[in-house]
Image (cartoon, rainbow, N blue to C red; front, side, top):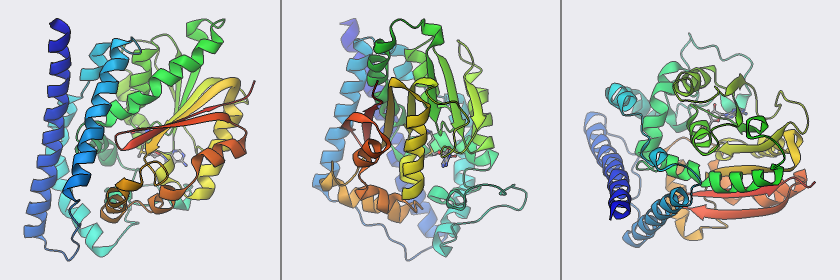
Length: 351
Ligand SMILES: C[S@@+](CC[C@H](N)C(=O)[O-])C[C@H]1O[C@@H](n2cnc3c(N)ncnc32)[C@H](O)[C@@H]1O
């Protein structure tokens, strides 16, 4: 009975975030089209596709719950949500909307305030991904990011991130002669640190590392991660194409929602770097968007995504062969599994 209640509580908790995201999307689109009419009209998705998306969503919640039941991570992480941050920054999401809308209307994709230091970043990175104010480079962007992602995915972003954890723990069992506190895991492009938080919940003793190009996002990650128990993850600003670590340093590497935001050449370089820094016998686990090869029926949703949001590399990503890229870098036994709007690729570095 208690179990059923908790599962029901989890489903209700998720559904409420889902409805909130939906309500925000409908309301904000209505309000903005009244305040600032535009010819840009996104096509509504057909009903049968929406039903399929909903089925995938329910399956994601089920798998998420089952992994907690199996002890991959504690149940309390299922309910983790930065409510105080969300309440604090929700008004700012609205205040930011007119600028986002205007940028989208003007097709202005490289709009950076003069007070932001944009020197030294790869040119592909200097974009207003999702029309975000400040791209990935401002504190405002870092403060709003998690809330915006939660709205986009109807509160399921962490549930998708958690899909890397079962394979991560399973892979680490090959290093059972290594004390738990000496297991080293790197999260590449860690952003605001949500994935590191999920990894910490599953592996309380491991030494965690995170890199990202954005100083603002790293500051945000540091602030959040310093509030949770356990050793503070070591965060470094670095381009994922040139990781500042020795060869064979990590027992596992992960990367969540990065690859669809990279041009093809950078995608390959990041995979090669992940291969270099992962120990033989270790795993590199990617969680990113679904693709045409695994979800052809979702094509209208994927096309709608890159047409509505500014995602300059997504169109190429949709048909890119990530398995081939991973094998080309030297990984083997690559598996891929779709979960809701994401897929998880697990790649092993040969011993
Ligand atoms: C969509 S966000 C994903 C962030 C985080 N992994 C998550 O799950 O929310 C993409 C992240 O990749 C980072 N990024 C993009 N290109 C990068 C690169 N070449 N090297 C390092 N980080 C990069 C961005 O700064 C941003 O934090």
